[in-house]
Length: 110
Image (cartoon, rainbow, N blue to C red; front, top):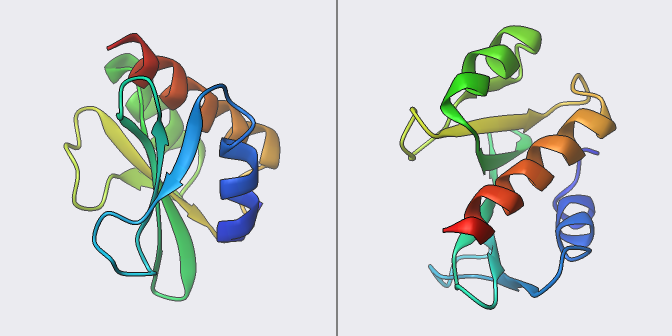
């Protein structure tokens, strides 16, 4: 998974989700949960790659950051609760999907 379209398509497989552009800037896409209006994924281009900010349980933040160089403290987000996934092809699709799914689950519980 390396493109914005792939992330959006996968994110829309979760119940009650929709794509939004809150800044009226096509570079910033967010995926929201309709029932709560909460954002579970921020999608944007930075330094030539698509990045995805996902919420993460605090005890898993460093696990993912240590597992992949392309998982870093979240750009423009609370670094104690969010990671950025740099979609440069080094993170396996199954792990990207798992992190997005966990973010969805965390945001749908609030």
